[in-house]
Length: 351
Image: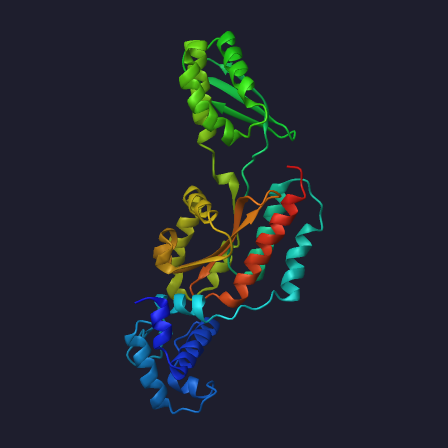
């Protein structure tokens, strides 16, 4: 049954009972009983009437009952319905906005240090674990050079137009000579000017096939080896994770799930690949429980938003991980504000 259909089947009384159950659960983390709701509802209803409404909501799959005699809590489907169709998003509180803005006080030219401070502030404000996916370096390449270090080790030096330099050590194909390394470098530099690394990779794939005869066999192997190296970006440095200790504030019964979540957070490459998928769409996205396969076993929720560079191109993402009972109405605008702030800051930088 679609969310639109579910919403249409809720009358005003059912809608208010459902909203109060969800809001109370998100605030307390405890199942909500009928007697609690009798004091919270705008319409004066008996506990028996409220119990009947809650039973109907449970039959619709919107509420769960953890124990026979306990109150109700929203199911994953219920949380999704609430988040998409009923949630009221707050404005970012002035204190939260100030805490995020203060991270910009130190005009540090190092983007990584800036994003680390922003990530730390985000985890502190939200009391969750924060994720910041740093942008890939996409400045045009100015110069590429191969340097032999040993028979089985070589260094590729990439100089970008903005002055950024990257050095990567790799294992070259056997038998490389100084002349084959020079030839490989000359071949690449002839194509590199004005192209970013990703543009160069896609262009080289076709050029190597077409111009292989112009290259010495050894030089061709070196170019392809270097291409493979640049294609397999190391992802760990691109992901900043802060505030994992905040997740330990959850109930003791959740400890096993938290351990699973910590294991997930250690697999940074998997998280980077997932966050890169979120870059395909603008705006804040919310993944609840098993909707996000990466965190499906840990019963967690992820609120994430991409950020853009000066060209309005999505280059990274900012997010918060916490229990499914996150205060979504507060967290969503904080993540959105942080993503917009990061985008504005990076757009004002040359790098």
